Amino acid sequence: MIPIKDTVRAREFPVITAALIAANVLVWALELSLGTRGLEELVWRLGVVPERFLRSPLPFEWVTLLTSQFLHGSWFHLGSNMIALYIFGDNVEDRLGHIKFLLFYLLCGVGAGVTHILLNSSSAVPAIGASGAISGVMAAYLVLFPLARVVTLTFFFFLPLFVEVPAVLWIAIWFLSQLLNGLFSLAVGEVMLGGVAWWAHVGGFLTGLVLARPLSRPAYRYHPDEYWPW
Image (cartoon, rainbow, N blue to C red; front, side):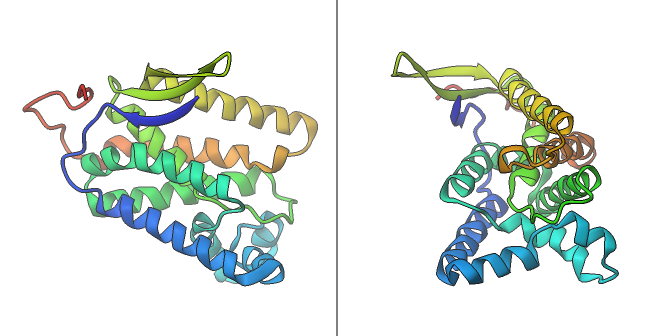
């Protein structure tokens, strides 16, 4: 299922969401300009490396919990993350406010990184990407807009179909897939199964669930904001 848009209309321009997307794209452009060796060095220095994080006394290692959120490994990695941030981020930013949304986003990314470190403590492979932070954004969307729907592209015998799926169902299916893959990765002893840090997604999502309600502003009352027919 490929998300296309949601049915919740943002009331304010999502300044932080747009800035985060721009920052990720600019960093990706920098990555492309470095060449293979330079890129490997950048990812090694700024990615979350669990084994190094736990043994290193250097305060800089904590910074990687933030810097890793803006690095990506491929066009698909970047594109899929930015689409999800674009769809869900504007509404969550609306409800939290610009500054609190930025804080929320970064804290979800930190929660994702810490979860990955704790469950993959011996790994020397850098973990990068905005997926953990965006997982938290999706969790907040689930909490704050339970009646929303997600317009989704799916295929029936190679025919494209656009269907509206309840956001609760869409996000629940997504989270269940992350959790099951995470459990399977533990069972086979390869936490980054398929090159994906599944537990970072789970950790970011759970962080978002915890923080969404305390950081949110009161719901707007002049009309329901969970559903807006286009």
